[in-house]
Image 1 (tube, rainbow, N blue to C red):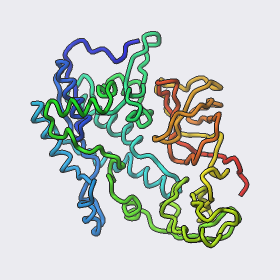
Image 2: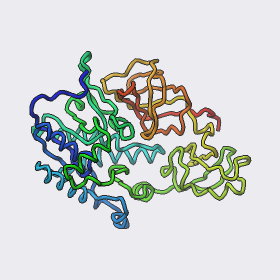
Image 3: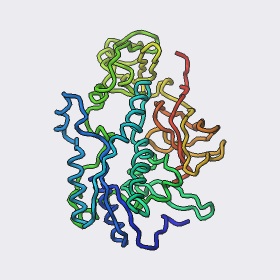
Image 4: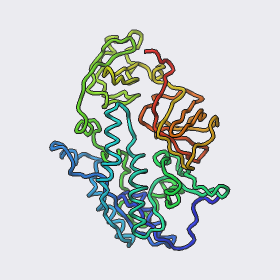
Amino acid sequence: MSATPKHPKKQRIVVGLSGGVDSAVTAYLLQQQGHEVVGIFMKNWEDDDRAPDAGALETDPGYCTSKEDFIDAAAVADVLGIEIEHVNFAADYKDRVFAEFLREYQAGRTPNPDILCNAEIKFKAFLDHAMRLGADCIATGHYARVRQNQASALFELLKGLDASKDQSYFLHRLNQAQLSKTLFPVGELHKTEVRRIADEIGLPNAKKKDSTGICFIGERPFREFLNRYIAKEPGPIKNPKGHTIGQHVGLSFYTLGQRQGLGIGGLKARGAQKGGGEHTPWFVARKDMLTNTLWVVQGHEHPWLLSQSLSAADASWVAGSAPTSHTAFAAKTRYRQSDSACALQSSHGALFSLGFDKAQWAVTPGQSAVLYDGDVCLGGGVIDQVPALDAVM
């Protein structure tokens, strides 16, 4: 198998320049290979679309507006001597990604908007725009790889070589048509090498801090952001015995496994849960939308936080069809997680179920379960139902 798609002739490649170092080095590497490189800066969120009291958040450390990002991207384009176009996909983003993001939170789930953004904006709206510009393919600064399987002729999505930066989890919904037109040059490198190249060629953003926030929220306080769009609906916080030990502000503002921001820490010292231990922290274990109740437990390994299986919906498979059921694979149920051995127990249309060798912690509806065969990302779906080890409430 070839390590990457072969492009023997000079190609017109449109690079998504985000203002960050990864996409900047992506453009440079393709330029060095002799390709005609054009930059596109995607604006996916309207900075001015804020509540009247939200302006102060623009001065928060770590929050970078799209205007600042575009200035960085334009500076990179200037150093490399390439054209750059500013394209506004904010309307598409609001319709295709943000609306679904809000629906999921209002339903008490915890969505991952970056996954939907990749599928709907960066590798659909952006790809379509690039093709209209006469591009042969597009490239982004994601840490992943693409190769074509010589036996099947199918394109495969692989993990990036830098395991600590691998972003295949966020890209698992890409299909054959999208992968056939996509390059991930930095997926073949480690982050330290990307930084070294950027510094060596004098890129102005060589030392720019990596973005770690949700694409349209950045590093701003998440609860403050969400509160602008979802109303607070206070209700009881209960322990496994059914005792009310506090009040939550609204189930949408909490996620399974959450430990901070529950406002019930002081109750531990008063023995709110017998045998829990004076210093044993509370974790969000369940959200009951019908009764507007937040259930919490003490202890990281409480049975309510552990699951041996899950069912998922809205499946998307890179090859175009599901892999063989009852086969041993590995899966992630959240991004910052090691692969966990599992079996694909069943797959019917857009639904599938996984069974894990070891119990998984705080598997969360709304997040994505992504399946792997070694370094090959097979696809995945949105986690729907998660039976706990102790399902009795």
